[in-house]
Image (cartoon, rainbow, N blue to C red; front, side, top):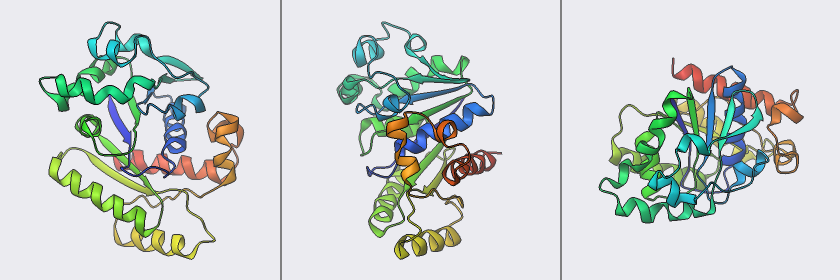
Length: 247
């Protein structure tokens, strides 16, 4: 099972919309895919029309009173399951601190899922924490959405410094520009210059769009309610680029 984490230390970068659409694109390839909503706010779960909450909350999850495989739910889309968010996820830190190996807790939770799924996408809350350290430890491909502005690049550079400290060599990193406003000169210049100079960045960008924002109303991936849109084509192209980089 390959683990993809959609993560940024900065919020408001379109992480959730990207996660839902990329997970759907993965499942549409006929690959058994699980999307785990690790953000206690539960936006991803909401977008997929699922209530926030798992049996027993994080206490049951960490205590393994109920197998993690029993907590997954069908998303309603072929090959795509969801492990919903729970408000108690904000207490992950407490349980990690009490563990013998705090940075290995998530790895143990993920292990039983490997026999059931081929891909796991993690929708991660922003910030630097023990949870983010656990996420980086278990991740094979780190996807970093960011807006093409100086402030967003500043937070990206901070994350790069954090990654260099972890020195997790096998993890691939793919930053990509999201919520790109074509009418904004700064967005256009930053996106073009950074992508041209730094091959680590995905060439495909995702536009800022009312169609994407409508996901909060439609509560479904772009491919369902706007399959012929430029925005959906961009998401599909981004996923193909991500997968191709792993070949």
